[in-house]
Image (tube, rainbow, N blue to C red; front, side, top):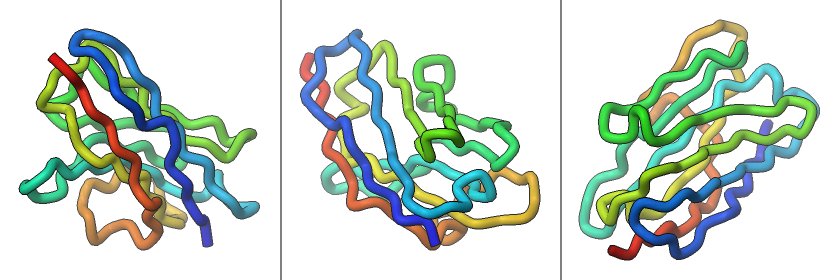
Length: 125
């Protein structure tokens, strides 16, 4: 089982960058599909980005072109580079993981059994 720990949340200026990182414990990180979800106050949790065990990526339309998910298997870490931030990006961001033998990308909340504790990102205008 991979245990994920989110980090890097902070206050950011609109238009600026921020990088979230997620360190996963366990020896089999390379066999995990990983992803990021977010939940704004009063709204439902939504998919942000995902990366397959092989490194293929998919981003939601709301962040495409601004956010980039990546992984470093040697460091058991997945990243979310966020650029051109807007106030609407303010939310709690969750790192998620799923052990899998297939090359697919997963985008549903129920696809992932492993969730981090969440990290608050606040974008000021």
